[in-house]
Each structure stands twice: as C-alpha cells, then as structure tokens.
Image (cartoon, rainbow over all chains, first blue to last red; front, side, top):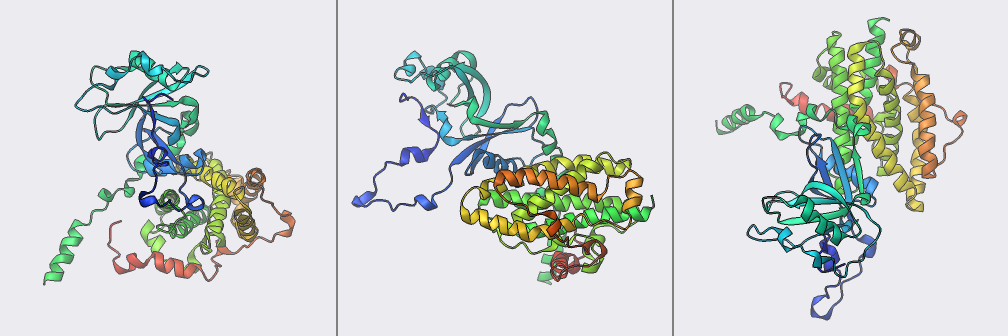
Length: 213
Length: 251
C-alpha cells in the first residue's frame, strides 16, 4: 500500500502506539469488541447510496441485520442497504479550504502499489465537511491506487471533493433490488417510531397547570 | 363461512402478535449488544404494529376498537398460543422462540396473501415483507450462535427441546378449522405445520441442532380457547397499566 491511502478503521493506526510511562496495555483479546462494518443506505430507488454510520458485528451477515434496523428504521423510505467491513475501505487524505482532493492525485500515487487482477471498485465522495460520503459509481482497476487515479478521470466534479473512499465491490454485502423490495415496504406506515408522532403538548400543559394550582 | 369463524382466526393471529411483541420488547435496553437490542426491539414493535392491523380488521367486523380489545381483556379472553406468553428466559430461549414463531408466521402470511377475503389478503401481503426480515434475522442468529462454541450450541439445543411442545401449540386446530379451509381462506393449521417442519429442519441442520422425532412431542394446546399459563395475566396487567391510568391517552 502506498502512503496515499489509509485504512478507514482508526484502530488499525492505533494498534502499535506504545503505552505511556513504559507500561503495556493489558490484553483484552477475549473481550475485545467486534469488528466494525460501514453502512450505506439508498433512501429511494435511483438515488445514490450514502454512508449512514457503522455497526459492530461478528460477521457481515449479522452486520446487515443490525444495519437495517439501525439505519433504516426511521424515515419514509429505503430501497437498499450495503455493508462492508471497515478494514476493506481505503480512505484518501482529507483536504481543507475547499481544495479538491483530486488535484493531489497523480500517476505517482500508484508507485509501490501492489497490482492484482482487474476487478470492480466502488467510489464514494465527501463533498462537504459534516456531510456523508455518497456513492458516485464504480470502475475496473487492478489496485486501490489505480482505482483512485482512474476515479479522477471519471468522477472529478466541478465542485471540490474533500475526501474519497475506495472499496472493492466484492467486499460489499448488498441487500437491494426486487428480491428484497418487500422488506422495506411498510416503512412509511411506521410514523409511531418518531417522537413527532406523539402529540402530548396539551396534556403536559394541563399537567403543569394542575401542579401549579 | 360464518363471521364467527373469521373473527376466531383474526383474534388468534392478532393475540399471538400482540403478546409476543410485548414479551420481546422486554429485551429493550438489556439486549446482548446495542445493535441487537435495537433490532430486536424494532421487530417487537413490528409485531405490535402487525397485531393492530388485525384488530382493525376485527373492528371493521363490529368488534370494539383496538385499544379496548388490547387493554381491557383478562388473560382468559386472549386467544394466543401459550408459546408466546412464556417468559423471555435467557437470550437463547427468546431467539429460539423468535425463530420458531416467525417461520410459522411467514408461512401463515404467505398463505393468507392469497386469501379470497381481499381486506385480509391485503394486510397479509403488506406485512409479509416485515416477517421476511424477521426470519432472516432469526436464521442468521441461530446459525451464528449454534456454530460459535459448545456452550452456545448446548444452550440453543436445550431451549429448542423445551420450546418445541409449545411451538406446536401454535398450530392448535380451531373448532372452525374445516369451515375455514372449505371457504378457501387458507389451507389450515395442519398445512402450516407440515411446511414449518420442513423449513425449520433445513436451518436447524445447517446450525447443527437436532430435531427430535415429532411423534415423541406432545403439543401444548389450550391457548386458543383461553387456557393459559400463570404467566399471561401479569403480562396483560403490565401491558395495560398506562391505559388503565389514562384511557384517553393518545398513543
């Protein structure tokens, strides 16, 4: 891996930090948390998938189970959920002051990269700080760095992109399409899952008035 | 088919869903991990929502409104199977019950989706997708845990053995069974039971869990006629606590 791309999982970078004052961290292997999975949700058909958050899970199948209820239980609709192990997502540096990260991507980033077979990579853009990464498309490449370099030609936008995520298509579990359309069908009927649906203001006012009296 | 037969069918479906939904909601806040806590609670909420759809159908047939039906009956007026009223136990039991019950309900809803009574078919078609996810959830968990380590496997096997007689009680034939089958509403409890045995056997085999010889298991019947364990009345009282304090509460 060249220096340009890092793992999205911050724990990867923390693993080798030595403990302060010469002590060592106690081993917590047996109790350690599950790995994390990144969750992308498609709000409606034909809209791009966007990053919604992470779930902890022992396997990708279970990550989907959790992701569905964590990230699609509210809101009016959902038409698909993708999950991918955090370790399988590579992340570019992040730019400041509206600089376009693509302007820093040149052929040199591929130096030292280990090329494999050509396969499909998914590309995600962060267009504004504080927003979510959104899926922009996929392309064929033989390594993450090449995918990123090719993304510059295919997906660079007029407006600055601050940060890019790259992941192999095959590493995703994608629950979407006709086979699963029915599992989201009743979402619009679940307004009772939102606090907004519980109108108690009058009762609270009455209760407060009674307390004062 | 008489209206009495149809109401009997709707009541048993609705009461199973309401009671199991309430039971499963007892895991809210104390689930085995945060993500699962949310997923399991969410499905419990689905079940209560599904029961409402059936109480609404009953209301259209002249029964009292859903809140009154749900919150003002005593245990012996409920038609749920005893299976759903059993305490949540430890997570292995709750998962096994979720697995056994939802597999049955998925078949039931798939059959009712083709029912000639259009209002009922519509509800079944709509809710089937929710139950599909519940079954995915159950299958994944059972396979994951049963193949994890010996303790998890043994706990699940023990819970399965305990749960099966009660699970068979879900298929207790109603006194209107023939009438309902003849009217083509759905193929009846026996048909669900046979399909259910096939479906769960596939997953249990993948999970390395054993099914006993069905002939050695005596189904626990009675729930459909209002005969319940001592566990139901306290559940009903807890469930209706808020309603009894303020029957006008809007929720």
